[in-house]
Length: 396
Image (tube, rainbow, N blue to C red; front, side, top):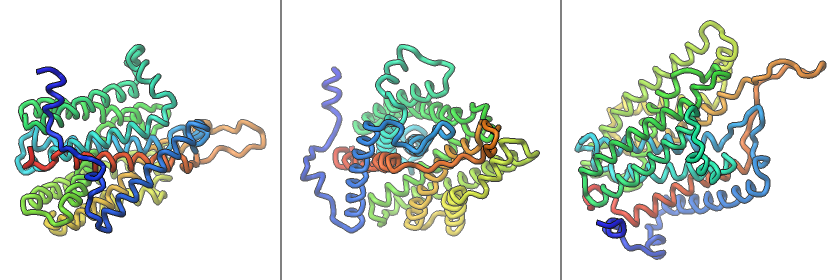
């Protein structure tokens, strides 16, 4: 079979502008549509400002070179890896209860990583030059080079797996899905190593983040699974979907419990012994409201809700997942910001200068617009995908 024949054999629905605009005009749908268009407008404006002013349009400085766009990129690629794990439960590992979400989750993993790429493209400065020199001059000792390369391979395998899922060829979908999952996990743990390799930043340095990233990816994927299925069935879940979501809720309870264990020991080991540049940063983090927003929204509320009825209330878990994704954003923002809290230069450079204090950073309006624009891109791509492709398990 030629490449052209293979592509034309992919089952897609013929849709036009009328079909795209033909959604049910409920208040929730209209709100999401309006927000999507607003976010896309923000993206265009933000990119325009960036193209005119460059990085001067951002709130980053030499002391705080990683800003909101890095955090949002991590937010999207973590979501992508989490959805890949969720989708793999059915078509790769053969758990029958979770096959109903495989296509939807794998497609979600594709659109979220595309959203992440759209955001990071306007942070790295020269994305096309990066792609060229990524091939002709690879930095094999660079964690960031491996991150970009592995995520490129991961996206390729996810697209191929999704195509075979659409065609109903489960044998090939399983093979490419397993390969994509392994590459995605490697890419994601490698993303954690970008922070773990920071020898000058003791608060991040070590083996914690490469494993923590995988755990939080799975948690994020389950949150998004509840949100996807909630919108798909308008919170009126069939019995088989309720059974699947109850299973996800129980898994979420276990994962969140492990996350609480991870975070608790991370902070304890950071503070123990009063190590400079680690203990003082950990104490500062504990006094941050964004840290407690992460703890309450991602850890405490989901765990209490799961323990309440062991996931028998999928509607409640839907709302918990929406708030949980807000907490996941704070988790990614804290990860980037907290790493850079302590100035690397602690000595006075002039006689009457005060000693350096904590590094302060607040995202610029341009950063916020591009970040929200990334969310708009994801929402638009996912919505169009639900029209073009049959994402339900019973539609091949």
